[in-house]
Amino acid sequence: MREGFLRKIEQRALVCDGAMGTMLYAKGIALHRCFDELNLSQPQLVKEVHLGYVKAGAEVLETNTFGANRFRLAKFELAGKVREINLAGERLGTETLKD
Image: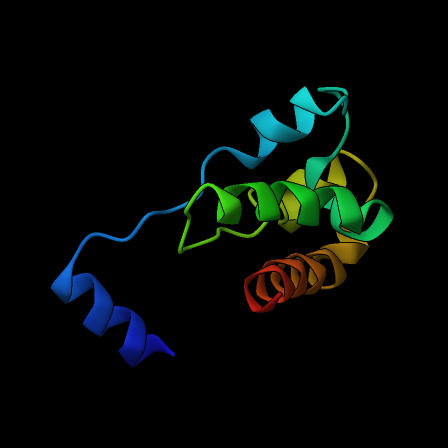
């Protein structure tokens, strides 16, 4: 996969997705929520945002894991779910690209 990606970016610019947090907020998620945790509690919503970007032409998706680290998640008492949240974020992005 890595070699295919590198080959593609040598040939042309790739279209990437945009701001996941902004789109989740636009869909009604409050700013004080942990957006990364939505990978577990509202995976369909995260996947819906990914799908919107794919439909708009995105070829590269970033996972919904911007703040999914022990320090940031601790603020939401979720430090023990770092791995689970990150794996779910990766799975959602991958599933969306395969659909």
